[in-house]
Length: 156
Image (cartoon, rainbow, N blue to C red; front, side):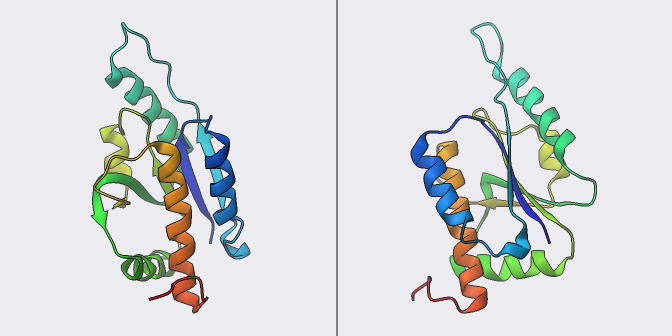
């Protein structure tokens, strides 16, 4: 199974890249994890955020493969404990399709992307900066895997 993160925002602070790489480097090799970054649409004083969000949505949809299972990361999605996420990850894996997680742009995600998503996962009710969401995503995915496999990373 392939797992990838499709994220709007191609420039992140060094600490984000370092922390993200730290966790994704621990992922099992059979996940063949990949990060695909999309550029943030240009915004100007005269351009409304809806236009930028629509442009980013088109980019996202063009990069999603037809057979992929899409999980949108959004503050309005389903919140899960780490144990619940481990169970959900097992369900996603048993589905047999490759997994594509999506983080939208600074103004949110286009409705067309929401409609394409198979599920929606909330990392928190808080609005998170995109870089922090990437790091939290990677850490929680690693934690879910560690719970599945009995790895000692997660402690009760």
